[in-house]
Image (cartoon, rainbow, N blue to C red):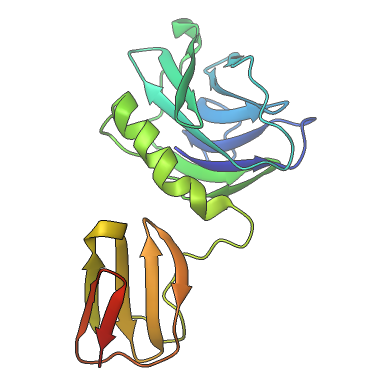
Length: 203
């Protein structure tokens, strides 16, 4: 899974691929986009590609998940919702990838972010939650890091009624709503921090 922004709908490109050589020219499997549509490609002596009918709009960030549902099928989710199941010809799958090479983000026309590969399978509910949690990070001007140059927290406080996390560092106090930093101060917090009912105290 990951976030992808297509910069062209004309040429296909791989998000990730597994092959038995470095060029991927022989036996391989790849998760890809073709003309803006997510899908998968497999090849032993000959290859086959199957893609969704949904086109990701140009220059738009989309969350796409490929879930292996069996020997030769994948469920595709787009922006937290089930999109389609693609089924590839089992006879086209690689028969020899013993000397495996994993490649990510090669030969494509996508900007990519937060790409993850896993042997575990998220549920549809988990996929929807991941999308909701991460979507604010891909809005114009979004911030997701601690304010300033100090990379560690000296104090934390959770404002439960507003679901805000306050993080104090020597550079100031960063306020997070989910994964997004929604505000900050520049007063150093290095000892303790407390927040409740719109009142924040720290030192």
